[in-house]
Length: 131
Image (cartoon, rainbow, N blue to C red):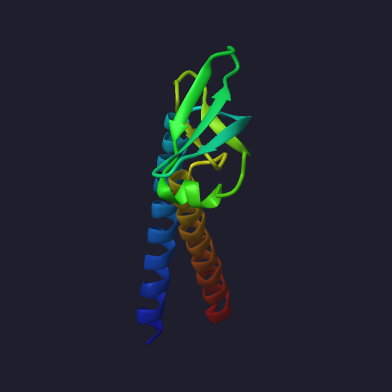
């Protein structure tokens, strides 16, 4: 029974730490590929079939982007909204500063790495308790 428990803890240790580090690197690469997003105040125009936001970028250029159904639902009834636009790319915006995909991968990496650390601590405790 002790050998089976040791094997399970060892698997959790290596899989947790290894996958956590790998996903952490992937999250970093995704964050770098996501680019820089700057906050700006935008004007929201509601139409019958679609909604549009317009804003000025840091260079003074006028940008516009149609809202998805989810974004339009979130900004329903608002004439102005705080958005984030992509520096260096025209007409790219989102409502959140950070990417949800990057956040999800980073949280998964942290969770797996935490699992590996907890399994390592349990392994050490069992090692000294049996010794």
